[in-house]
Image (tube, rainbow, N blue to C red; front, side, top):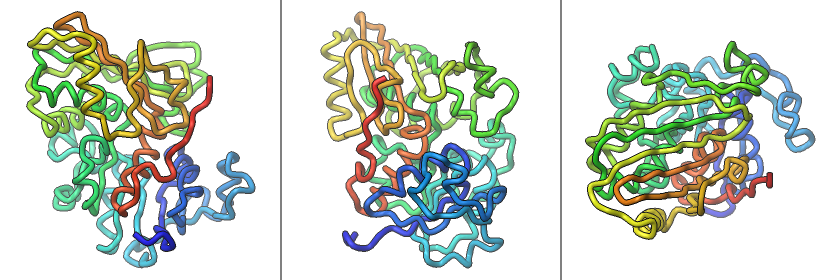
Length: 346
C-alpha cells in the first residue's frame, strides 16, 4: 500500500485490556489512523481518562457503537475486542469492503456444534464462518495475506500452537501430547470476578477448566491443518500469581531418537522467517516477553521424550499484537511494522 495512505481503523470494545493494548500499539503505528473506538459504558469519555497510560497521548473519545454498522463507510479494518458472542451479531452488519479481525472466540471453530459445546452459544453466522482465516501468523501467513476476515487465536492457543507446530509438521509425534499451561490474571479481563480477581490470585496457584477449556478445539483444529495430528491432547490450564504472561510446558514423545541439536535445528528451520519467535537456551521467562509481541521457545530431549517451553505476553502476542501483525499482512505491510517493542528487564 502507499506509504502516505493510512489504514483507517475502528476498534469495537476499546475499554478492556485487549482494546487498551490495541490502542497502545495502533496509536503509534506509522500506517494506522484510529477513527473510532467504542465502549458503550464509557461513551463520551476521553480514552485517556479510562486508559491512564495514554494520558496526553491521544484526543480520542469513546463512542457508542452505531445501531447500524452498515453506516460505517470510512473504515478499512475493524477490530473486535468484545466478549464472546457479540461479534457474531455485529460482523455481518459491516459493509463488504471492511476487513475484520476478531479477537474473541466467535469465529475460531469451524464446527458449530463444537463451538456451542465449549462456548455455550449458538453460532448464528455459520455462512460467514467459512470465510474466516485462522490468524496464527507464523503458520498461516499466506492465507492471512489475502484474507478479508481473521479469527485471531486465543492466548493459550497461541503459546501452545507455536510450541507444537514444528513437531506436528515433522510427523515424528507418537503417544499423548500433554500441555501444562499457566496464565496471569489479565487473561480474565478488566472486570473483577470471583476467583479471577488479582487480589484473589496474587498469593495463590490453582488449576481450572480441566478438559473443558475453550481453546482446546481451536488447538486441535489448527494442529490438523499444520500436519497429521493423531495424538490425544491433554490440555490443562493454571492460574499464575502474576498480571501478564503465559508459560506453556508441552510434553511429547517421538518415534525417532533425537538429540538436543536435532531438535533445536528443527525449530530454528521451521521459524527461520518468523521475527517474533525466538529460540532461547534453558527456559523462556515471561519477564522477557512482557509488553512485547515475541514468543520465546526452548526445546529439550533425552532421545524419545521431548519438552517444549513457550512464553508469551497474553495481551500482546496472545491478543492485540498478533491482531496488528495480521493487519500488517492483510494490507501489504511488513508484519513487524509498529510491533518492534522491547520488553522490560525484569
